[in-house]
Amino acid sequence: MSDRFTEQLSPYIDGELDDLSRARLESHLAECLDCTRTLAELRAIVAAAPEYQGREPSTDLWPLIESRLGEPEVLPLNTNRPSALPPSRPPSLSRHRFGWRELIAASILMAVAGGGSVWFAVSRGGTEVETAAVSPPPPDSTAIGSTVGFAEQEFDLAVRDLEQVLDAGRDRLDSATVRTIEQSLVRIDAAIAEARAAIQRDPSSSYLNRQIAANMRRKLNLLRVATQAIAART
Amino acid sequence: MLLSTMALLAAMQAQGFQTDTTFSVPQGTRLHVETQGGDIIIRAWDRNQVRVQAAHSRRTHIDVRIRGAVVLLEAEADRGPANMVDYTITVPAWMSLGLEGMYTAIDVTGVRGAITAETLEGDITIKGPAESVKLESVQGRITVQGIRGSTTINTVSESIEASDIQGDILAESVSGNIVLRRIDSRVVEAETVSGEIILDGRIVDGGRYSLLTHSGELMVTVPEGANATIATATGSGDVRASFPLPASERPSRRRQTFRLGSGSATVELESFSGSIRLLRPAEMESRLERMMLGREERVKEKQKRPEHDRDTFDQDRS
Picture (cartoon, rainbow over the protein chains, first blue to last red):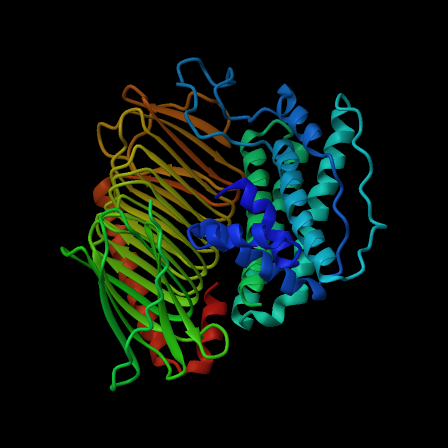
């Protein structure tokens, strides 16, 4: 996939390319499966847009995320840094794992991507964009507590975005599929709630951190799969 | 590379509006199939040819597009995408596959190339020496056997069963059980929210094995002579072994660490409210056999029930 051509897909859909650019892009599309698929996905999003009442995503979040990822306070609890386990235990070789704070920070990325897609869809679809729900500005990166609160808020917004798309498009999916997704979300929410309650009593628990992080990631993934399926059915 | 796009409107056969077309492909070609509904059955042969047989409605035709090293199969109806197409496709054994369907069952046997498959609703079954698989389904049971390379599986509500796997395994489900049998992998990671996880196989020196569930039970085979550091963490569940364990290197009941042999492999077992069981291979085999028998009986029971009762049956079981 070529970035140059990828950037032209949106104007192509809107009929904004000149003849030469359009011909070049169409020639490229005949050869590039990735760009063809991206074009199809964009078209699906545009088609789905009129049913979604969204909000404009907050911007410039990456510097905050990047800085948070570099802070020792949010390093994964299970990587190669010195462990609380006895020295005889070999360092964990497990793949990079996220603590729940880090997961929330990473989820902002998804919020941006998800919200961005939705915002893109809404703007392309001509639906009025609601801009009232603008996220607060990022706090000072040294204020860990408030930053985490900010990140959690972004996570919640991302989830809300995706849930709204799911609500708007649920009739496009088989009722059994919708039921499965909703039951699974309930299970995940319950697991997150239980682990969050437990971590209040045991804040240093690495495995509770993993439980929370894994389930938050799982929830976002499930919502994204559901909304992608809705787009594909459009 | 000279790329071409070719649309072959395959000939309709008189019987059942079948498409049946065969074309040659150069080594290294990848096959991509997209469909809304219907089955995708893939079989392998030793020719450098792809044969596409498809059952579909009169208004549907199958487009075969060749784009560089990719053959793309798509069903189109006179008005928009086709709904139901049943594919039976025979491919060169070396071929890599990308299979996507909304309401689609996928069954692949004998392919050595890399396989990716996604369904919204429908089982995925892969048997054979694929170099790697990446499989996803929301409402589909996923079964893989005999994969040589990395195995990545993600499902939401149904079970995952993987057996005779040699490569790294990453398996994830929300409410489905994850059963990994006769595994010979250096890396295994399995996570589920409310399902059980069973890991049966070799613990390779220096390997790492991580099983994580919220409310399900974990069962792991620990062969005699294994060199592993087993770290367990539970909230309200307990840890039991069918063989003598050395004293834990950690005093906590909730978090324990047991060193077996040199301890070179890392085994992390975590369940918030489920229990953890460590078993010898023969004991695990016995349990798995009982479990399989029980499942077969449940399937038979389900099949006996009228169609409209089955959803309720499934809900009750969940």
